[in-house]
Image (cartoon, rainbow, N blue to C red; front, side, top):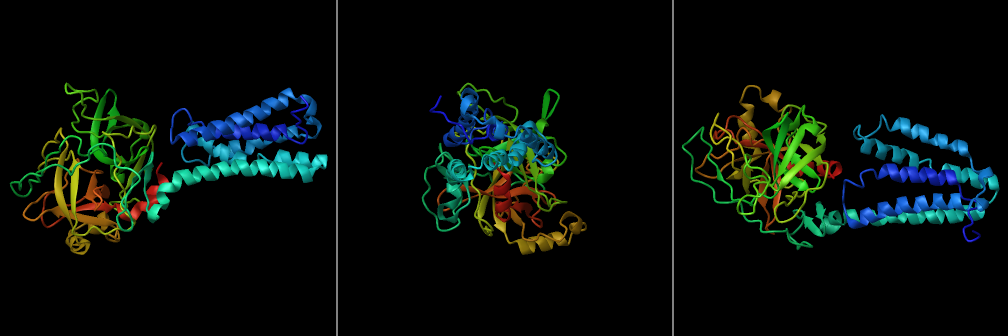
Length: 448
């Protein structure tokens, strides 16, 4: 046992660090981010557990007289504080908050022991070296997880080695192509029969791999009520008014949905009308959401979506990008005419983004504008209407769904989220959408 000399090492500190890592990584069996991240978590837990085990085996070199057992009381303040300061009151989130607080004081028993033994000079140097190597692993992990955000000053998501982002500068090549064929949204139908008919045609299957259908469970049945957009394997973007008052554990999502009445099991052709279901762990509503202002919310999934040929996250636009006069596409399960029935099959239409000023002026003339949009559009809305000679528009049931634009590199970015409007297909009142490019920082800060 002479090879394992533990003189000067605090067993209390090592136990506190072991508790820190275990409680921090409670999500390890449920969430996968990357092989490196998973290996790093296992290493921290394993290495610290081995240190504690060796201290129990090599008792003859461990100086327990200078180790302050009473410092296990340091567990109490973090345990109490984490009950009140956390992202949400769940075992995983409370455990993570507890680990953050505990790590701040876990090294105190080591410093106390060093001072008692009077060997601060040598021991502190060794201890700081170990601490530096442990922090270095966090730096490497940070570089790995943020490398996509640093490329050409773009903001985006990493899906393995692929960059899903609309570049903030000139178009550039990405590390990989989106998996599977992603074509332009399918042919759009002819002009409808006039207001209030808004048209829409069945979308081509597989064209909208980021489309999400939001449902709420009521016993054994599910009520489908809104759309959403997969923007990362763990995050769905939707409208805040869709999930206002909803409980996360009652929501169910269908990814790459096509026909709502179908199951997610394969059909006779070996395909399915949805790539799978997903459960929601947490709803993040924009903190300034009120009336129709800041109408955005994020749904954080319990497990990552299986990104592949059938499921592909949509890109995010550059911050504060302007898409005025751009041709855009909208998909959803909204009614095809005012007060009509909801379609079973996903529909899509082609629209054009119009200038916000005249659009806002039209809405200002309507009684109740200030109640719906306190302070006006404030640059956080965009308006879209049917292409020339059409009256295409979003309508009831389309809320929360994506308005997407195709970039010069062929990739689609979600530029708007269906928020509201006056009627459907009224040429005097374009549809109003939340402007995603104004919320990029908030989306990135609150997504996973």
